[in-house]
Length: 235
Ligand code: NI
Image (cartoon, rainbow, N blue to C red):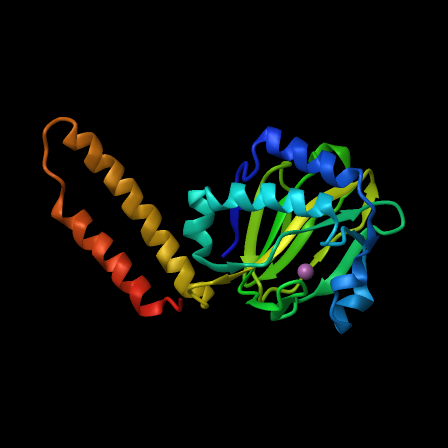
């Protein structure tokens, strides 16, 4: 499932993150690449121990934790601390690869299974050419270039790349999520069901304002959602 979250960062948060990271010292992107992806990775990355990276990561983490769409779509169990990358000049692309299945956070030795990959766009798309995130899925290739502040979540199992940036610069934040529900198909069903129930409950609330009782179907469907989650979740 590919999912877009509009304004995962509010404009003031986006401005703060950009200011923090633009002034920092960047390194070669291969610092976190695996052996296959290292041969096709050509970008720059912010070393995660830098104070600017820590502060920017905190802003992103707080924004995501309060976002109901993020929680509903990902059902996060564990989130790898967000990283930042930069494409432009000579370091401007990342060829086809699949992200490593398990990431180990160096500072804490904590493991995260990468069920979901995330990119949070940090540059105005009009300010650069190229730089599309291209994700291969069963419907073919999806070419993704969102507004600054928007986030895309896609299955960690996907082959993907970042097209060469031929003008300007593409700044982004990226990270991985281990979900309580490992299967993308099961997460998708839960997401669809959750969205439908939310819509039904909204209609129920409108009817309740006119004195009608809560509909028993909504209660039963909500129960089904939770019982499916109980069946599938690993916590
Ligand atoms: Ni990747």
